[in-house]
Amino acid sequence: LAKGDFSGQFVAFAGYQYERFTSGEIPLWNPYNNSGLPFIADTQAAVFYPPRLATIALARLFGGWSYPALELEMTAHVLAYSLLMYWLVRRLTWEQNGSVFGAFVAAIIAAYSGFMSGYPPLQLAILEAGIWLPLAVLGVLEATRDKPIRWRWLLLSAFALGISWLAGHPQTSWFLTNLIVVYFIYNAFTRRYRWPIYIGGLLVLGLVAGGVAAVQLIPGIEYLAHTARVGLTFEDKGNGFPFQDLVQFIFPNVVSLWSPLYVGIIGLGLAALALRWRAPRSLFWGMIAIVALALSFGANSVVYDYFYNTSPGLRFFRGQERAAYLVSASLAILAGIGASYFLRWGADDGGITRKRMQRALIVLLVIIGIVFGMVFVAWLGNREAYGQYIGPMAFSTLIAALALLLIPWVLTAPKHQPRRWILAGLIVFELFSVNMNATGTYEPIAPDEQLSMSPPPLVAQVLADSDGVFRVDGFRGLTDNYGSLYGLMDMRGISPLFLDGPFRLIEPDKINPMAWELFAVRYVFTDWNELPVPSEIVGTGEDRTGAINLHRLSDPRPFAQLVYETAITDSDEFARALLHDPNFDPRSAVILAHEVDVDLPETPPETAVATITEFEPESFTIVVETPTNAIL
Image (cartoon, rainbow, N blue to C red; front, side, top):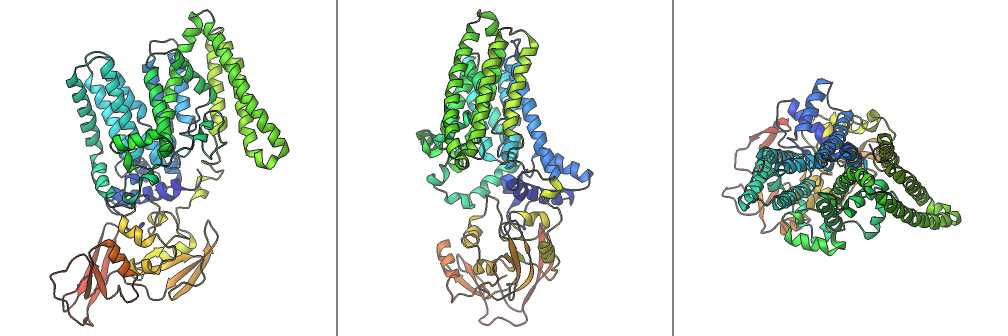
């Protein structure tokens, strides 16, 4: 996988998770990134996600934590998503002779189209939270298949929702939860259930799912209120697809690095066919796809404004383009329904379906061909400017031409099994040609070369310093969340849930002497040859950006210290301003929100000392010796 969040966030955090669990501890706190964070409350840590616990157990049996361990977990989730989608569409279309074919088509499109093959494998929490959609939908489908509701199936749906919330991406789980609530209400309405069933069903979904995920949700919700995310505005949260990204439906990899809206030309055609012929259950999934697509534009569309003000929970999330998750899943289900039914239509209507499909495919090929021709002419005049577009457009033209040849041929003998599976093979060819080894997602590097479980030389040099407890500034050299992987306390980190107070002190400046002082930094990784405070270069090396120096500060603040003065402020803003006052000495005074009922000496005693005698990730011991009152 390409370097980024997968290795820098998820492998690193899961490595810390592995160390704590295999040491017999629940990872409640992580001192190694973000200057320390409540690990259990960071949703992306997925502390209690069952598949992650299984991965940790297997890694323990096979030699320890590794990069491939999490890659295999990711791969298993993609496979599980395809199998669960197959099961769902089989049950949706079980009356049809083409059910197996349709379920296969839906499974392939769901798991291997643009969305699941794009950034979700890198941002693993999105993938792992999203794969539970088919199981949750299946539970509601089977629960409401007959007039008397079958509660055990609804329990399955609620359980799948709870597991999704444990997976660590609340936004994806929020999309899924809203889908399941709407789907249950829709099915209950079509079955004409009485209102107690509505209330009872929603209570079962909420209570069971909430109960399953409570161990993650409760600390996560509390933590969220104290993170830097709280200050995000409507504009910050409203980013989404620009309208030109609709091109992704036909031409992948043209307007953006990833193409999450791409389900393949054939898949899109089968989905449209299901809607055109009003196949059973197709209207619901068509509406979900349309609403999710409108929401994915974020503040570019008025739909987002409406849901932002009316839908509970949406205002907590940014990156509205992630609603493509529901677009992709809905279109996969629609394509499966269309594939199941169009074989029957082709057999029963005397060739009408075949002729209509042929005309539609001719129109599509002409449109795609015209666009390709225009780009081809432009490419002949400026190959450098149009080189990135010519390949994807030529491929889409080829697929449209093959679809024109193959689909009418299949419909001339819809009961002929080999023909339909040749069509399925074309779908596989189309999706895998575009998404397999996609440059934005994968790199041709062996897993053991992608990330070393052993610390780099400069990091190892710092780890060898056993003289007390300290932090580092790892913006360069250490980077990302690798402090958690290597056991080196970094005041920085890339977890999106950063405590607001430390974030405001640390992140404004990448060379930040004030933060070094406040967070007891001893070493700074940087490309600077000289820092604003006295330091010594004790090592040189390289990171992914270039050459770096390892500075050891000449007078770092002790990790534990006794002070005898207080400065009282009435706001965080005033406290931060005071820290920038050159007359304020943070080594002799502590900033407090109110007075303390302790008599402090005017002159600090010379014999007072605070000594760290034991330091572990989840606990530490400080022995204080002082003849007078002091503040630690």
